[in-house]
Length: 481
Ligand SMILES: *Cc1c(COP(=O)(O)O)cnc(C)c1O
Image (cartoon, rainbow, N blue to C red; front, top):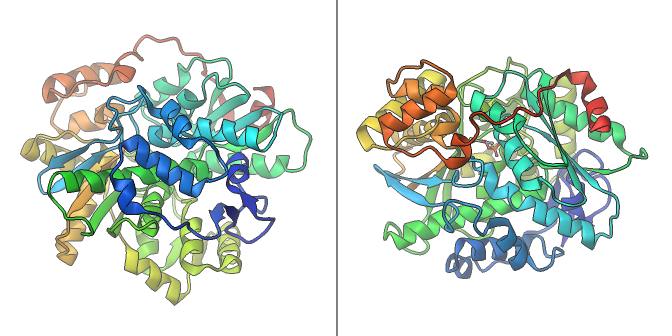
């Protein structure tokens, strides 16, 4: 199947090469020329792994033996072989995406990406090692480190914003073991780290390097595609629970940063799944809310630090894929992205705005509202959620209140509450004495929800990666790694 850049430059490549390269040569993102015919009803009948196999085979047909790759990625790695269970909470269903090895939803994709990437490397006959470069707002980094640790022929380098992640998130990354891993803090925020990584790609193009660069961020189609599965899984869970009949539409509220998770939902819809409105939930960094409501994307504002750091993003990379999917116009996408780069903002044509309006709704939630929601959901429904999930919950409520749309609602839960113990503990009225590990234990005692093993085990582990660098020193760090 042919993939080409959202900006129209360069040549079309097959799916294996698209995964291997990550980013298209003109700076655009790879997209399939046409989405394949897909038997979505048959897909719903399988296990989580079978759903994954069907979806990934359809989108990445040049990557062979998908069933084996899926099994290697997931078997025995998650708390449950269901991978992503759905839990009824009040009027909504919560899709728990955090039951993987690092307790964030990134595990669904980053358990799979190493399998896809190493197979793509073989298919394309590439001999040299791959260097994975990743900027993280907190969760991608650890999930990628665990996924790529000691994978032969691959090295990985993770950059996180210094002071921009939770203590638990930092501990997860700086204690990472493995022969092929490097981790470093960057002085700046997530956008600085992400821009730094993009610049390294640009600076290294055409240069002789001892490795080929690739990315584990959701700019890589091999990162996005594995996420489509859980929309099918949620739909199937609602069917099994008797909450819907086959063909009924379901709304999804998605805590959003880089627009990857929610875009996977739109792919699911394009593959036939009866998805209703996709609700884009942001925190106080509400650039996407403004965009979806007005048609103007304007990043010229300060990046705020919030209690949901994985959504502290001003430049949502995957929005570019949506603009392409909805306009089909690579020249327009190239023009808008150039404007974003030079002027910091762009406005989409009326027709494109209307097309987005028909599929998406957007809202946002500040830290105070997220805390209030964590407390309320815990006290009234007995369910403990993290600040990202809380944003999804509140914006789902706002949507229902403002539109009266009563179709079944699935809220995507993207992280374990134990990744953000301070915010969650204070939201349910606990005292914040001690470090985040002491807070985790207090949270467990108050809530009765068990601390995931991978997080409990972090305490006392050796810190191996303690470096902090200026943002213009990132390339140097990579070359040494
Ligand atoms: C990454 C992340 C998000 C946002 O996902 P995107 O794909 O970037 O939109 C939301 N919540 C958590 C906990 C995350 O780690």
